[in-house]
Length: 318
Ligand code: G3I
Image (cartoon, rainbow, N blue to C red; front, side, top):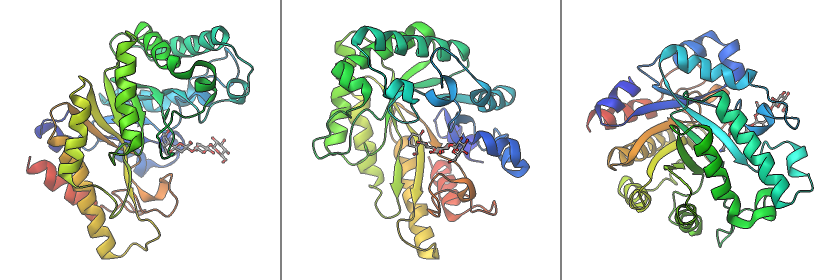
């Protein structure tokens, strides 16, 4: 099974995002999530985000976040905690507030210390800052309330606060579309250097890896790209891997290409010292965030797709 094979191949884990509501409502789903041989690591899909944890200023709620954290704890699975400072799923009291540097810094620090404090000691890693780079041609920093208020100074502010709140958690920058060696990739490299230059701690970069069938780089290209980051002294991981069928029906040839693409992505992590693990963003098409994308490794009837076997083989061969 995937986590056992991944650990034998030298990774720390093979994991999945877990959907809070579905864990509660679907026993078959829950039983697969509970299988530590399959998934040695879990990430809460929504429960630890700002809108779930601090919907009103200073009123912290952890019911949703505790669902996946609790499952991981009782099964002895690693937990990746997601996410603290993100422009999306951000309550309007934050995004529409009228802030200056001092007031927004207090809000960020209070959010981080309360949420990380609640999960202290339970998180292998935290996605401290998520998706701070835009998809424009220059890879400009995303014009969020955080960037509007601080320019890039909110990165060190957030990472320093995170270190204080849980010194043992690995602190990550996490983003998508870093996989193509474009402007966004360059900006992410700059971001890591900028955080370090400001004297703040950063331990890892998460490559979300929301890919498309046939549009996924080769294993060698991906390994080389990951090495550009590990060369800066950070670990890397695939944190939200899925490979969607873009505008294509799920034929057997499309499924075969998807299997190849999954194998290349997972194989590239195995190839890089400092790539610690792979998390898929949901394991089953039925509950995937991309509707009709057929992006996952189990079909909607809980059958393993060719992608599942391809990942097994690439891990077994390592
Ligand atoms: O909880 C409410 C529910 O009360 C309401 O009735 C329902 C009606 O729409 O919405 C529910 O909230 C939804 C939430 O998922 C929980 O199911 C939101 O509308 C929906 O937007 C939200 O989507 C999530 C999305 O992040 C939000 O940006 C996806 O499940 C989640 O997979 C996705 O995950 C992100 C990562 O965090 C960051 N990287 C990209 C990735 C994919 O977008």
